[in-house]
Image (tube, rainbow, N blue to C red):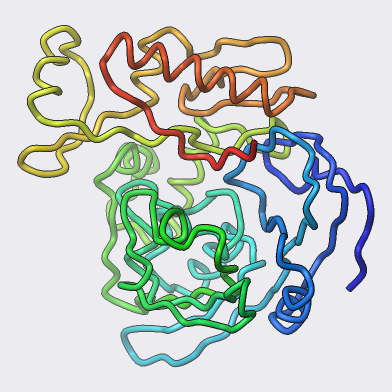
Length: 336
């Protein structure tokens, strides 16, 4: 381990924001991380850099979590139990599972980031959330440097939420995540979003895990920009959940408003539809803006600052609140 001085973090965040780390270090083992935390408590952790917007230089020691490895803990005819280290790329891990015919994660293909951050916001897409396959995870307590095991219940998962985003935020570093995946009798989820349409266009009636993964990848590629080409962090806002009565009132003014029933009294409304209807889709402000194909995605076209993008997000929130009486919640972690 060697601490470097004055390192640009542009290649360490998917927004491509060019801020500076006063000090920077990469760790590739749990032991290295524990030893580091014994002497450095005030650290800024970064892994895949996919769910953050950096708005300033980082004066703390930036620690890049680069712990790799996938292991099979046990398996039987029906299930396989895997432990995956935090530094593994999420999409590459999903493709590995699909290739091995391990089911449960195929709908989460092409989500940016690393495995270690997937539980923090309980990543989800196309009717699937990662909490449904996580059995447990291990994390280092930054203060004590002890390794703790969190069960699925301990993580207190919610919609794009977990205990690591609120109650114990900033107290732990996730080092590995354990998954239970199917080996046969897969529970295929093709009814959400455009998956069925994509499969039908390929004349696929009985899809495999690979077919579903490919469908999700194709859909996401038509809607979402590649962070390697245009800086972004995927969905910037959460899809709001509102009361059924509030939705009925909105429906009177906007008859075509899409929705997903959450419960008898709650309805989820696509944030992208709200933002597009408010006129922000494709809006460009110099080097930054709202993506032309997906209004839920804010982008850095070249050399935008994090402050510029955050200001645009606040402007969007204000307009949505005024027009729809809905308070959008930012999904991305704003570093300010």
